[in-house]
Image (cartoon, rainbow, N blue to C red):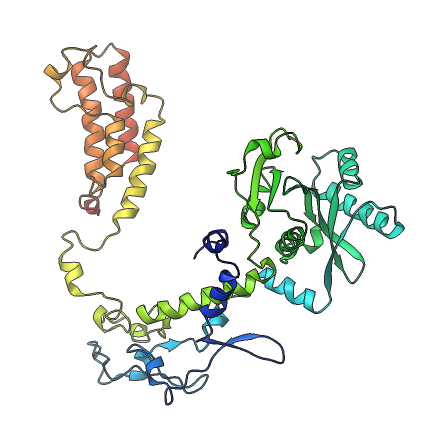
Length: 455
């Protein structure tokens, strides 16, 4: 998925190009209902447009009707004593409308609430009007509740500062449930976001994204090209979703001395692209996603869902090749034959060995084994130890998948301890540490017959 910032950046040199590209993205597969402006996939008619159906397509007559594959697929007889099988059980069920599997974004739901008049947005400032003063007071209280670490006196000073503006999120006409306070620097073409918060009872509804998108569209009208803000650790995630980045591209001379500096905050920047309509972000991304799904379905069978098998009810074995969808997914007997050690998951072995290595390396007696012996200091070490090994080398072998079993991993640990007891005398701390660590290894790693060839 191409990020919106990247899409807009590529189209900045071509006015209006980005919206035209988005519109053309799915015109061949989508249509808009003129009554409610809801976008739905076009109905594909195989009789009038046979090319719309690919070789792997499925015929669907109605919801709940039987589906069958094209004539090229013939289900294999299940070799488990059954005289016949129901071929319809081998046929996949394909989603009639792939858009139903993609939940509508919260921002899109907020857009619908705005269209229905449930919420609205308004920019105000401290202009002395009684209604605006009441709204700013309500917004100040929301900021104070949602930003408990911020001094209330500081919040009051900025919200009521005449150089600051506040974009209000109003519900049911007049009730303030959130907003953004910011200060525009028109001559420098940027705005500093001071506070941004939504009432706790109204969060996780897409209001935050819709609020920021409204602010982006509003500041375009006064020549603002980018935002700057200091975000704490809890707000960084939100700002990243809104297109903010920790990389500030604007020269420091343009903003240094204008914005307020906060200890412990992270300075973030968001570029505002004039040719992109941020209020249509959700619908445009939805069109792009749907177009990608359409293209993926021409190359993949991942959208096909097969029904469950009933042949295992009698605890009988069946040939894995006869399971519907296995052959189409690319599986073959050669995949097992080419794997000399079978089909065990090597990744899970690597995870277990990593956990064991961490437990051993953190043991109280593992201190002599973290790094290889320095042969420049211990000159005669290699005269006595022919195969030196240490915990760092064992970790490298785990990372590159050198251990095919837990037994091989334990053998290296035992060799490491044996090298130590071979070179050092029993009265040394090195010898005693090796004995103690060996006892811990024996208790922690138990080798069974199946562990000889683990992977």
